[in-house]
Amino acid sequence: MPTAVFWVVLFFLEGSSNLTDKGKSTVVGLVFITTFLIPALTVVMFKITKVIKDLHMKDRKDRLMPFMFISIFYLIVSFMIDGQQWMTPLLNIVFIAITTVVVVTNGITFKWKISAHAAGVFGLLGFVVALQRAFPSTHHLLLPLLLSIALCGIVSWARLYLNAHTPKEILGGALLGFGVCYGSILLFA
Image (cartoon, rainbow, N blue to C red; front, side, top):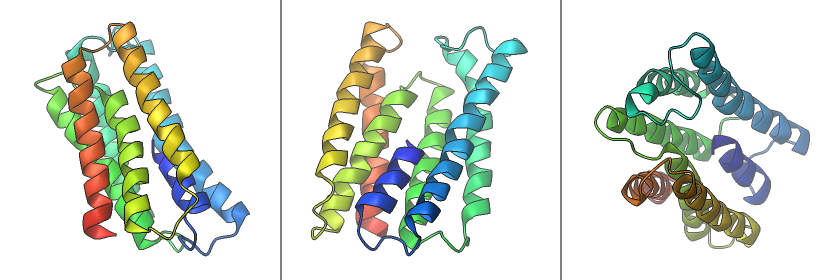
């Protein structure tokens, strides 16, 4: 989700950054590495070292250690990128909101198996809808909006089809992701 949100903000929201297209691509690449690649490799490492049973983490207890590590990693990245020359106030709000979703998802996982996938894709949708509302002169968000809606449907259906989550777990993730991300833009942007 962070990679997609940074891509939307940097490439579809006019005036969101003074970076060149190459600079924007570099930022999106760094966000991908720090928020997807490193956490994904960490989960694989947990599987190899038998900290978790499998990569699907169907058991709520299997999710605790990876989610805790990923939450800590997101918090560290949040502090590291704050104040960077390319970090605009809007991008800072976006990353803090994403980190909030990750940390709250981790906290909820101690008691309930909320859908992190739903939280992520519905968070993306929340950002896109809120950005359109907060910046009504922006007419370039139709494609990201349609892709976000499609992604929400595909991911939710896939989680149900694979019996990875119940409808309530998906709804919980969807409400968390959409609510935090939508609210963060409307309240702070």
